[in-house]
Amino acid sequence: MFNYTFHWNQALKALPQMLDGALVTLQIALLSMIIGLACALALTLFRLSANRILAGFATAWVEIARNTPALFQIYMAHFGLGNFGIHLTPFTALLVGIAFNNAGYLAENFRGALKAIPDTQTRAGRSLGMTSMQAFRLIVLPQMLRVAFLPATNQMVWAVLMTSLGVTVGMNTDLAGVTQELNARSFRTFEFFALAAVIYYFIAKVLTLAARALAWRMFRY
Image (cartoon, rainbow, N blue to C red):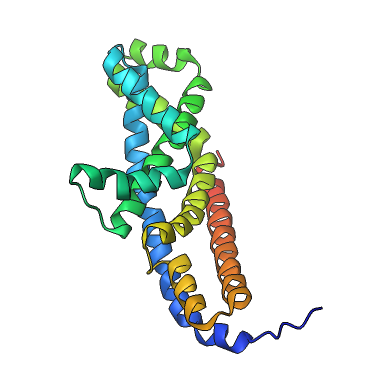
């Protein structure tokens, strides 16, 4: 019944190619987090704005990002925008889709972090002569980032794992894409994808441990 013969040597010989793909995976995840963080901060400010248009725009972004599949968002970036004459490469479409998703989740994390900070913090800053923006930048924002740091780390790990969806839009240079091409040439599905899973797991664990160490160093007081 069980007559499958493992050929790990083929997968191990391809390990350098897969590690090159892992570097591309990390590049996409890191860029998507940088873009996502910037957009999330803007969305958080928009949701606090008295301007209904900005608040509505931010709410719509967060709701779509959090309540639709990430695959749908990547598809829309690659195939949907193409219907309007905006043609993105698989790399760019994957980056845009993940960054859109990151921004939605991070904006919600920031909103929760803001609610954890008492309003008296802002009033104390204003009583010292600070403007509203100064109080937010110097008092509220550092505390908000401290509360949201570990949830943002989880989002970084999720961004790494989401890059595997790039194969659906023709991405073939990241870890999942390289693994799929190697599998298509050799039909050693179990070996290649098992090795890829180990690499993904290692990346996720390293990111998590590094974040914990960084959080301990930055926020221990």
